[in-house]
Amino acid sequence: MKQTGAIIITSINGSTPGVRKIAQLCSGWDIIMVGDNKTPAGWNCAGIRFLSVKDQAQLGSRFAAQCPLDHYARKNIGYEQLVTSGLIPSAELRLGNLWLDEVTLAQTLQPHGG
Image (cartoon, rainbow, N blue to C red; front, side, top):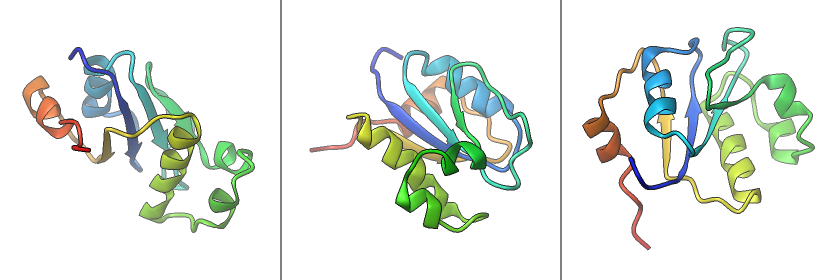
């Protein structure tokens, strides 16, 4: 994939084959995985910045401090991080045991109009 962008991921699973595939296919993109209480300790995937609950608490973000744990709304902490860095998210992915091929991922990450 030649375009660059930014992706926000939320998951309560470890680094799945789908997550690793996203990191591989979107090398050079800003990818943030927003963790939660159920996300395995020590979550790690090369090419993806992981924000643990502890990391989120240290951001100094009022939203992160007030956002409920174990809630999908925590994805917005990733949005906040990207936007304050001057980036516009290209995609948001809520992942389970997802496996994406390059065609499916390219269709998922079509640029937004505007």
